[in-house]
Structure formats: structure tokens, C-alpha cells
Image 1: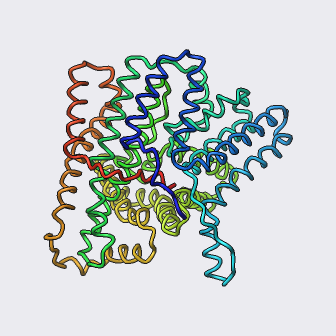
Image 2: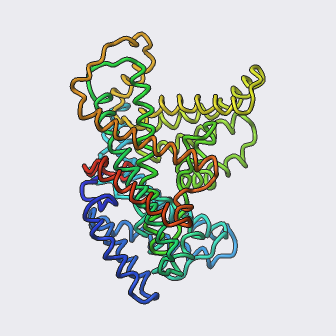
Image 3: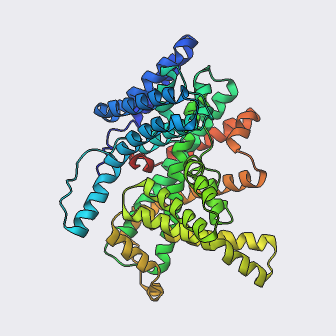
Length: 483
């Protein structure tokens, strides 16, 4: 599937850094009643910069959900509302299936049964997976009578297309985001400071850590040279950090941009790498997605099926669905399947060893983090490598313990190692930041925004210097743009 990510108005691109201040200044000076129109026009311009021909798809999805919600709002019972829910589900999921999954299923059916299903060559519409889930959550909530239909079409359009979180989340619920969009205001001093800190922190995560790790990772994964098994495990850990920092960078920048307009988006990553078990990891990782899947798919299924085997299968199915949501490829299905199985067997095995070893709570937590790290390191290639043949080779090499003493030549890695060292310096700062935030249960950017100006300015200047000195400005797209 083609993604067409070359002309995305990325948050870390120069053109966006020139574009955004103009929008922000205009937002501050125009009358309040026109602010939503400015953001709506900006959002459509932001999306059209990628490919204006796909703007009607976004508008069509918005119109269908608005119309069906209005019809559901006129019905008194769920039975009366159900046809309208099915209409919006069919159209939205049909578009998602057609653009994202048709080729994957068609290719595999053609390979298995020698059929002749015609494949298309359309671009995958930018942000389709995200805004589809966002509009579906609105339709579900209207159907369940949790929210009333939004009558103002302009505000609803802005809810669907709000540009800070349009293409890569977080996936916001209407009951949280719509009231804020209907009461737009100029950001307070605190919101302005908080937003800028989040943006700078996101730039640091993206440019200093995530993008600097790419060259070294690719030099190990995408080469015919074989390395000792421990190096593949090490790179698996680096891939985990790369994905985490890249994902969180976008979410933090999106939160920061929204705050500059007085809009508060939800926290999408809450230090998942410090979780003590796999279930805790998924409760902290891409929170808006996992909660969406949990609220609208997993929990309703668990309420219907009560026995252990069925509940275990539901857990595995849920994580396979999360994997498949990320991409129409077997590696993502394998990623979800592996995490689903590990999640199911974690609790009984953990309880068994806890009784036998009689560990203290602290020792049990340390062991849990160690096992979680192994799971994430082993599954990282499943997420990162789409080519199944390469993936099979990498996973096999990770389990080939006889390769421990293969010699490594570092002579051709000078540039890659330089980038790696710069990324590791960033990871040290990220670790300090995360441990302080975890220990004190605070968000440091929030504390700095409220705290003494000396600490805030020194932190801001230090981060900017680190970005300018160690940042990789090669304009690598955010990973989430591919989903």
C-alpha cells in the first residue's frame, strides 16, 4: 500500500514552523466567534497539503456521521437508532477496509487460491485510521445515548478535523473535545508556557532520540551480514525506544499545539516502559487507542462471555486487532498475537513463581520489568520490519545463541555510532525525566509551567541547545503517518 508521505505538513518541518506562528497570531487577534472558522480552515488546509484530492473523503465521512447522528437523536429507542448506526458503520469501516485492507486480503487470497481479485493502487488516506475511530466513537456514544448529537455542523467538522490531532491522534471522544472547541479562547499564560514546553519536549524526543536511532537500527536489520544474537536483542531494545519516542513525540507536540489554542488533549503515553507487567504496559501505551478498543470492543465481549477460555481468546483477539489496526501486514498480526498470548499467560505464571520464590513486592516488580523488557525487545522487530523473510531471519538470529562469538567490524559504522551516541545521551535525559515523573506521579512539563521561571527558562534553553547540537534534521516522517 502506498502512503504518499512525502508532502505531509509535518510538525518538525520548516514549512510548518513558518506556517504555524502565522495561524497562532491570527487566532489571537480575530474575534472569538470566528476562531473556530480559522481553525477549521487551517485544518483542511493542513490536510490538503498532503493531497487535496482526498479532502472529499474526510468531508464525506464527516457528513455521514453528522447526518446519521442527527437521525439517531430523533429516535427514542436503540432499536430505532440501530439502522442509522449500521449505516455509518458500513460506510466508515467500508472506506477503511477498502483503502487499507483490501489489497492485503486480496493478495493473500490470490496467493492461496490462485484467484484473480483485482488490487488497487490508491494512496492510503492520511489519518484515515485515526479519524475513523474518532467519528465512530461519536456515533457509538450517540447510539448509546451517552451524548446528544451536535447540531452545529461547523463545530462537528472541527471535531473531526482539528489539525493538531487529525493525522495521528490522540483519538479524542466528542464529550471531551467538542465542549472545548465550542468555547475557544486565547491561551492563558500557564497554557502557553505548558504548550511550548510540550512542543519542545516532543521535538527533543523526535529529533534527538528517535531519528538518531534509525541509522544504527537499519544497519543491523537491513543487511546481509550476520551478527551475534545479543546484538539483535540490543537493537530490539533500541527499536522499542525509537517507536516509543517517535509515537510520544507526535502526541506531545499535538498536545502542546492544542494548548496554544486553549484546548487540552488527553495524555496518550504515561511512561509505559516503567510498567511492571504487560497488561500495565498496554494501559499506559497509546492510551486513546487502547481505551477505544477496550470500551467499544473488548469490554462488551467480556461482558457477554464469562468463562476463562473465552475471555483469554477475547484478550488475544483484542491485541491482534490493535496490531492489525497499525497496518495491513502479517508482521503486525504476529505482533498482536504474540502480545496477546504473553498477556494471557503472564498472570498465572507470575502468581506461580511468586508463591514458589516468596519474593518481596520490590523484587517482584523488578522481575516483572525485566521480563517485560525481554518481551518488548523480542517483539520490536515484529512491529518494525514489514518484510516477513527479513523478520524471520532476525527472530531466528535472536534465538541463535551459538552465534554469541561472531566477530563484529565497527570500521564502517562511524556515522551510525555517532548518531547512536547522540541518541543515548537523549535516552539518559528521558530516563531521568521518566523516573522522576513516575516516582512523584507528576508531569514535569506541567510542574515547570507552574513553577519558578528560572527553572523553566533553564530547562527550555537546555532542551533547545540539545536539539540544535544533537538533533537529526533529515526530515524523517513520524511513524504514525503510515497508519
